[in-house]
Image 1 (cartoon, rainbow, N blue to C red):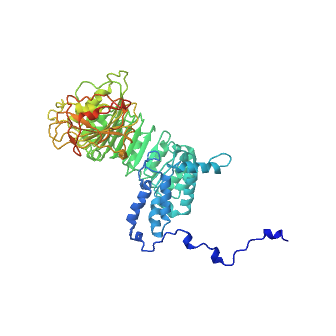
Image 2: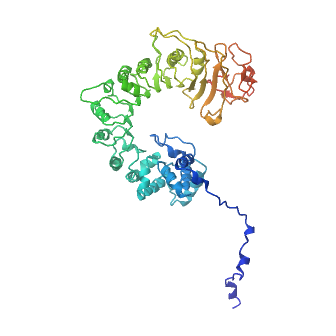
Length: 570
């Protein structure tokens, strides 16, 4: 009996107050029982706060998951916003509406938590098969919107990674069937070329989702495009056509029944020519577009496009024009388009050339509204000493120096030496076809982004000419300060996405590049120990805080550093 007593349960002390720990043994933070100040926040202010908690929830663009850019970890931001909705009843209505407005499912966490969760998924996997996280998230979303139709009606944008939308077609179909107000969704590639595996998904979108705003049709999707005449997706804003085979009359009828159509993209269509823009009896006119994109279109000419834009409705509506590798639209014809595109703000022109421009004089590119120009000329010749693209950039320089583009503020070129060429170019004589045009020189501030064929990042140069009519290089008004900031997106040598420099007039008819204050930026190529001052070796004046900056700041002490060809300060 004495041996069995050892297995008996120990009795608790009779005085339970002795066993209970005292309150003084623990550190307790005093609770605040005053009025809740968050009740004074109205719904609009709460919405602004929650938008900063989860920035990607405000993404209302019609770009796919790969093209939508937002800093931070979207998955963690969504989790934080979901926690905010559970804090109090007042916050639920605001945060829940934002939480399900624009949904983005990412394949991984873009933070340090991805390593932790990946290890947990490996431990929980069965038979060595790791769990597919984005598929599980899509399944949970599908269950949520099907159980709560109010939440499903709040979904407007759904962006999915590539592998998820290719392997989860059934889950996507079940999800969109209860999301009647959805406007954009990432779809599998088979949906655009008439693949039979996407037949159920297509039926659900056509029957349930009438507010779709963007659709793409590839080779094989001609029947789907023609089905728009049955009344599907009347709110389409954007249409992309790639390698399709269709009668121009049918295409015109399809465009004629889409009252909200504002952007059309044509790519690799050999049958497309100028007649697509011509008026024809019994057919609706080609719609007035906000954005027109042409890629590898050989039979559309500058004269045909200019005739289409000569209509006041079409010419005043067009804001963005993209021309890429179109043989019928050479550089010599751009001035015809710019003359009739009265409201054009962005022009993107990309071409691969194998011969230089003819010696015949051409009118300059002239536009009073153009603010952004992508002028990317790629030389295809074998002669590296005299590349054919040099004549095209000379034509661009002549247009800029003649003050034909006074509203231009951003310029993208595929020539790393273009900023130097632009700043050293002399004032030009009037063009042969413009006898009344008086050259005034380069007279507006301009941001130039240059890049060579072997470079991956754009090099940013800000050119600020003198503010005196008809004179370049004046010192009037003072010299602006050159500043560099790593948080604004600079190149790898500066800690960001694009290297930055500022070019200002030197007072003697030329320009100078001013480096950063109090520090010499890192560079990626060899720096010459001597500074080519173009005849000026005196002090450069007082900059910003009154410190005198002399030409000695160009001296090179770190011989191991390398500099790019586009470093204008060397």
